[in-house]
Image (tube, rainbow, N blue to C red; front, side, top):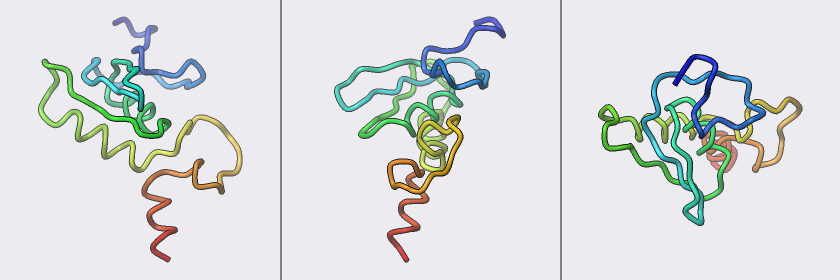
Length: 101
């Protein structure tokens, strides 16, 4: 993949570039999916309800865990500006912290 191309997991409105090679598949609740780099895989997973992540066969060890962990701290559609106060607009970690109060 050249520097000006992005992985299939990159949302068209997300301005960020890929970080590394395509190493994971992210699936939604009905098993539609996209392959992606760890960076865009985490952003996609964070934006899905009921999503899952799987490492591709040639992925480095721990790729899926790193994506899963990063997604937990990433807000859905994190490239969208504006106030975020609703649970659906917050990361999993932020929602768990709110429930713990």
